[in-house]
Length: 565
Image (cartoon, rainbow, N blue to C red; front, side):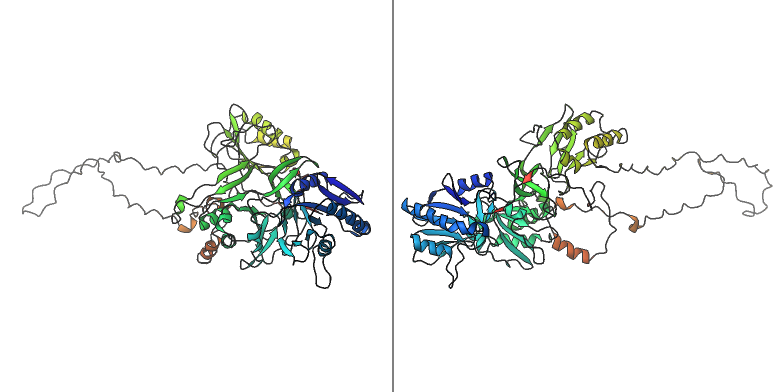
């Protein structure tokens, strides 16, 4: 059993034990190294040790030697990161209690297994117990499941699992998770436990894979149980396959405060043991395999200016975005210059390629999919220039082959060659799906009505010879009547038939707003659907279908999962 000193963090382990990687140890040393802490502001020394069967025989003698040396050096407080060392029972006192009494130390220890969370924090699942402080002659004091304890930790500890009817609320290292009561619970070691802790703001993960049926009212009820100063800083994180933007806008409207909506799970994307790129949104499949990193990381949803007028809704505001490597972006409007004629705009669902000076691109117009990014090209009804192909080729060189294999090319504009050049480019780059918008339907020509003109040429009629005057007034024929100009001497035409009215049932219903264009109103939608006849389902061109089987490429970057101490 070796004793390793990592800048004041003491690690007891066998030479063959590599559960903790160098990056994990460096982060723990940074966050849990010796510092003034505890009730007497003493220097707390953290001792990390495993307690498996292989090392148990050698652990306790070596731990005793370490405690002796610490006590002789004047240390008064020790943090003992040993699984279950704080589990205290009347008939079996905790190891931490016995250490506190034997060495006259204040000891902090967990009552269960310990997870090392990326970023340098420790978490004791499932969250209903946690860390305890044992002092000689005093009862143990609960410290919560998170260490170091964030400022919002105490408020979240007071949220019970059944705080929202029909839902279960779970404790995570970074905050809370809300899911349907029948959905699968999070487990230690999954990606939910790998979300790093933000000491200033908690995260609320909404839903789990195949358990996304969480209404905006459920999240509103959960956040309403938090203190007001904490409520406004909460981050909403998608836990399943559902895009949270409509729900986030509805929650912001209900609470009357700004709400941040993260595009994916905020995780550390690690290229190797010591190379950390920082926290990025990661979109993963239901099995937890990372698939791609969205470029627009988070948006801020603001409440409408007038709660009673939906037309005053404020569009979401981008907060953080990342450009594909090798491309430069304008920090103001998320625009990547591809050529003198073409540019790409970062969106929540991927990228939108259009001409310089074109109409603004909505960054939240399309729902985000975990399958992969969508590269949208042009605008409906606008002809695409042949100079587009080299600009797209430059863009695709900045994307990795695994990302290209998951990319969907959605062509809105009109390709001059029927899309052949785009199809060839997609095949060269390894893009498997290309979608084309339906060509715009030409407006029906107006009905032609004949302009009034001269009537048909009248047939000459012989004029009868003058008849002798009648012998009595009124006994003869009436004098001939000359028709007015423009009239015909033919028989009158039949009256025009009335135009048949278009059947109302044959008219398409007006398209309803997309889910991204207004706050989540699922409860109202359920009621309205029950009270009106269902309309035939319509298919919106360009929406990618759900994939039933997709080859699994390598993830875009390795995502660090929590590790047991």
